[in-house]
Length: 275
Image 1 (cartoon, rainbow, N blue to C red):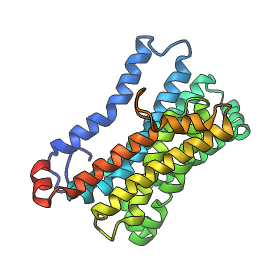
Image 2 (cartoon, helix red, strand yellow):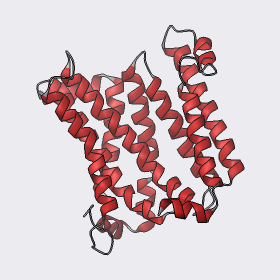
Image 3 (cartoon, rainbow, N blue to C red):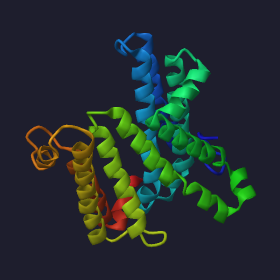
């Protein structure tokens, strides 16, 4: 159970995380109850649930880097919980979309087939459903460790599809999709650079932060250049101007350098701070 550790004892840490994972759903329910979702409540709720699903998907991918950088094995216990919560928000996202169409399942299916961005999102949902269904200890035993790990690498193409879906449905304002895409680039780059079972060195992590930030800026430039009428050079220049706040590329850089700074903390201090 989520609120117990592997020994079966009550775990305040896991219970707190479980409660935190439920907060967005509770806030969404409160907003719906009080009529705070605006003139199109179903659409607003659908968007909110989907956004939280992608945030949690990236958070589940952050578990391994966090465990290795902080050298805290207990962090690994959260991977399954966060992953299942991600799928729960995805299921809510689909249910709310169906509700917006008055639960006309034929129309829901027709929309998913006829609209490319919905097809992409649905494929991502199916892939993540498979991962959620095989996240149990029993599934690991039945499949075998090696086959289970290969199957669960589907999370990476599923995340790409989810981010494409998020970007396409966001239309003009793709600030958060670009930020999420940049953080995903960092998460993938981390796994490329990390030696087996350990975090990359400090120099590698600084280079990773710079590379992920550059990739974010390039992706944002390409999006505005190809998909909108906005001058992409103005968007690229905005990434270097903090007068109106940080653009996604700079946020990715800050996050990446923050991870590198944590990596630089001596092991003893990291353990003391986490205790």
